[in-house]
Length: 67
Image (cartoon, rainbow, N blue to C red; front, side, top):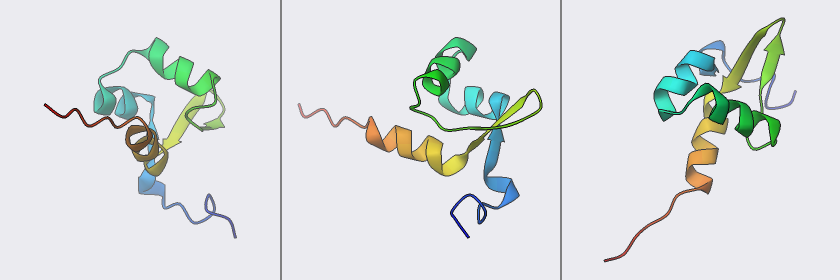
């Protein structure tokens, strides 16, 4: 089994969940998806994102400003 097969259902987020959590626009989310920066799963016209992929992209872009 791979990691996707082990992802519990509650760890999948839809578009609205991601937009609200990250405070981004639909276009920004589309750019992240199109560039390959954010993996997704599509069932029909509905797109889902793994919570851990959202966390990973946030961590990857984390910047600590020292004053």
